[in-house]
Image (cartoon, rainbow, N blue to C red; front, side, top):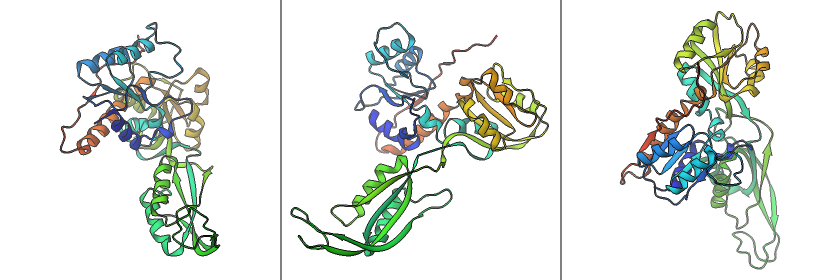
Length: 371
């Protein structure tokens, strides 16, 4: 198994195409053709994590946060970023970062928080925009069903709880094959008319390559006419944060105690609140001030996140409370999610070969201490 194989496996679970524009995800350090000896999963990549990878004979680190976030102008060992990257390169250790690609998955960072709290009936808090597209293509009527089936199998036509959704319109298509063409229908130099079906269906951004490949593979024409149209509507399956329901109602004080214990928080910053019966809770791992208004609008009674500023807490009201549990604390369970996923995928990757080991880093990378 090579680094590129792991990157492909991770991209199926946390498509890099859903990374935010400001982010830096994917393979940051190393050769994609390197054969893997082992994978170390960490929240951050520091020198101590690279040392741990060496000790565990792991030549690939899969990190949540990217060690290279903004442009590096030099690799002199003058700061922790450069020192970490240099040490990784010297020891042939590759580094992959997932960050907002995993943030935007409903089974990602916030799912770790939701699982710890036992939230039920969860849905995405901040659905991502402009990740849905519409395919429009034309095919001879007798080939329409075969093409639809191929596109459905590639992931097209899924809308919420519905599968195999499409719109179909019959009409007449014309074309004239010219020199060099090898038409399945019609003759060179003559305009041909064909009864065709227009097929429309939606798909998600990360499915684009598979959809186009399926279209060209299943379509009978030598030259396939198709349009891909970006849609403004949000996608309920892609986005940051989750909102759900607690297994049983809790008072605000009881929820504070539960969160402090379950997340092993050094402290919790929170808005003043006297809620007696809390059932609806929103969570978002990492910096989540941008979703405060959305959490309130969706009916959350408590919003649990990190990195809130002084003025953010004024948005807390009698019926809506804010909790800042710390950046590291809110994302700490991400390592377990990645380890569990890779372990299962590696077992089925090549049954005839030894399974590549996946280790969870024991290095606590939280740079913040509490007094």
